[in-house]
Length: 265
Image (cartoon, rainbow, N blue to C red):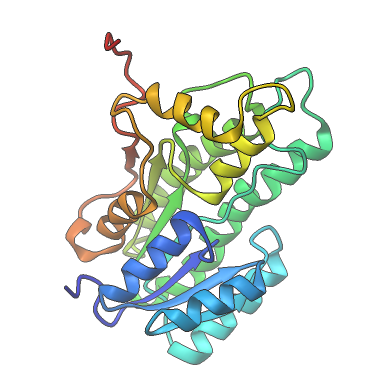
C-alpha cells in the first residue's frame, strides 16, 4: 500500500501509543515520518526501527520548539504535507480531578500541551503548508470531549477546545484558499501507556489492581474491549491521505459506539 506515497508527515507524541502506531502506519504507507516527542531516548529508538522515519526532540507546548521543528523539516524535506497533533499529557497529577479539586497548576499543565500545543501546531503548519496550496492537519481530541465527566475536568475541557479549534482552522484555511484541510479524530478507550498509567494511578493499596480496573473498564465499552492503537491510526491515515480530499472540519469518533447508551447486560 502507498496511500501516503512521497508525503512528508509530522506526528507529535510519536514515540508511544497512538502516535507510535500512526508513525509506523504512515511509514508503511509510503510517507517520510518525523517523530516529534519530548522523550528523546524512546523517540530515537522508535525512529530507528521505522523505515523513512526521523526523530526530532520537541515540546508541543513551547512555541520556540515548533519554530525549530518546522525549520528542520523544511530544511531537510522542503515541504510539509501532513501534521498529526497527537501529543498529550494527563497532567502533573493525572486527569482524575473534579471542578472542585482540580488545581490551577494541573489545569495549566494539561492545557499547555493538549490545547495550546495543538493551536501552535496548527499555526505553524499553516505557515509551512499554505505556499504549496495543500496539506492535511489531523488533531487528536478524545471521546472525553463529547462525553463530559466531572472526574477528568481539565483533560476533557482541553480536548473539547480542540474540536472548536479544528473547525476554526478548517474554515480559516478554506476561506483563505490555502487548500489545507483540518479534521479531528476522537478516540475512545485505547490500550496506550497513558491509559494503562491511569489505571495504575486509580488502583489502591487495598482496592482493585490495575488489571482489574482495565477489565472492568473494557466490559463497560459497547464492544466490550479497548481499542488497539492501530485501529485509531487507521482513522488518522484516512484523514491524512488524499482519499479524504473532500472531508474538512469533521470529527471522526472512533470509540466503538461507546458514546451511545446501551441496554446490553
